[in-house]
Image (cartoon, rainbow over all chains, first blue to last red; front, top):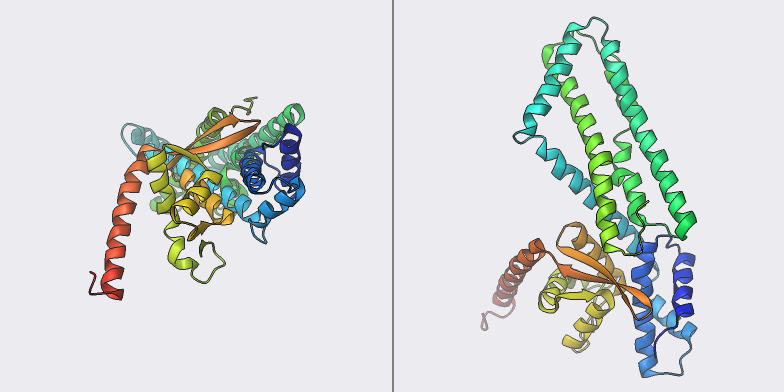
Length: 230
Length: 117
């Protein structure tokens, strides 16, 4: 005996009631529960849908679906950061390393020669402040639009919006006290390190927002036929 | 009955083997879905080994994130089913993990039952 469409729909609601908001996670759990219920019916066809569901849900333990969501979030965050790291390393290989070094050198030179360091520091920090905020607003709108149109929310979209947890690292405000205390009379080595830090910060931000996030969406869209690329 | 789950006292012995079990099954079956894996293990071990749901999915998701598994979602009956299959890296890792496990079993056998080793 197979589950009906309305029973499958009920299983989606059931997972949602048990704090699984994400359609990509719900889908796997719904199929698992459905398989379990059908297997029980094969042995005892008198069992009601709710009784069989209760037995299957209990198999997930006292935490219910909590562990699955937590571990899935961790795994996706890790996958995201791994991708960022992979593309980041490209900027330290030929030919891109020339571009990286060139940027660091230009920035170092600007810090060293322009008398008012704020002219060099403020614009770049403003960009680093505005870009992640702009990205998050855009993503939030995209997620809401998708939810409105399809009624679905996807975990990987949420991971993409938070840049796999890197969003906390991209809060330039944390580094403000060091950056705004810059003085061109500081030792060259320190100026060089600060230049390198800002360039690498910008590179990581660029890779996360413009390379990894779209890539993750494309991969997920390929995997899930129901995901609609907005 | 042995359980692969975090709450059981003997779990630590088997927890490390869960990934190997999954990899080995996928190597033999091309693609499988979560429930199918739990049932297959149960059948192969005649119910001796029971992979709990709370341990299986985190392991699958972790291996997917590590690039060992690839995913395909297909409509089966009136619902969607997520299939897992080995990537190229996953296939290589399976060989390594199986060799490691065989070596480990050999070592344990030498310690526990020197006559057999």
